[in-house]
Image 1 (cartoon, rainbow, N blue to C red):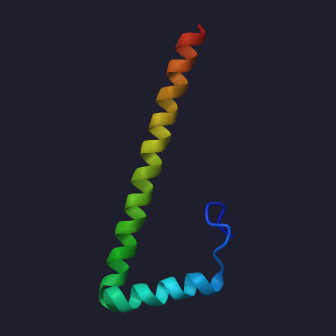
Image 2 (cartoon, helix red, strand yellow; image 1 turned 135 degrees about the vertical axis):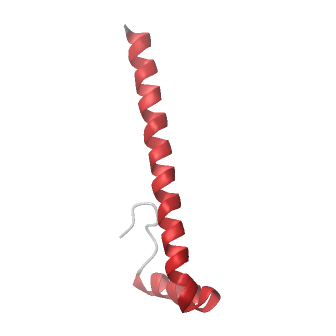
Length: 63
């Protein structure tokens, strides 16, 4: 299902979601999900920016 977590299945995902619901409660869970989504997007943007910078430097060196 997930490339970076090959051994996780539906049962494990369900268990994680139930534990998150118990820990954070139904009121805070959407906020936690939103914060997690923003964090992942920011991380991916930083990775893409770094990758672009590296590619630009490599192109400069090759010229």
